[in-house]
Length: 262
Image (cartoon, rainbow, N blue to C red; front, top):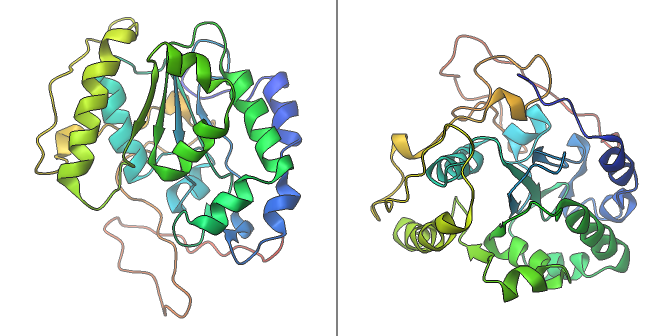
């Protein structure tokens, strides 16, 4: 199967029940125009690793899947080192892109009963019998996993990991965190067929080109062009910015969202 077929009925129903009104009540906190982003990866029960990230950005808005930009390609490289090329599922702490960083106001939003209850239902439904471990990236993911009752079993089995966000600004601390997670997590996961794990540590100087991996077509909706899932392809305009930066490629689209229709 080359493309992601979309969510099965049980997940489609759950996604349709998402508390979007809670997000839409805070237009100063979320970029609502681009709509919610629900997942990337396997929803058929075959995932052996569950990843929780923070929120979608420009690339994710274009592709309609979680973690496909720089952060996602760094995570994809980590998945490759763990021996996984498809046996994973990725969701974010927030369905919509956040203005700014995760802060006390955002933590308070995530404590709303409707938001927390739906998020925990999603994680419960993802925690199917074959799931072997859970990883959260960044503070928002840590909040989500701390609030999820289902995390207790993974924590007790030492199969719950918290790592720094893949775009954290201090490379040495970030990669030290990833090396610790990689060393502890790799022995717990069953590799995908034909994929050889490579638990060798990252150099603390920063990510190299070979440390990133492109997002596979099987994670993307039908018909996506071949260049999606590698590099930074989408740029969000800053308010007042006159024009797009000159694209490195030979074509570009300026995509303007209509307010209040996300």
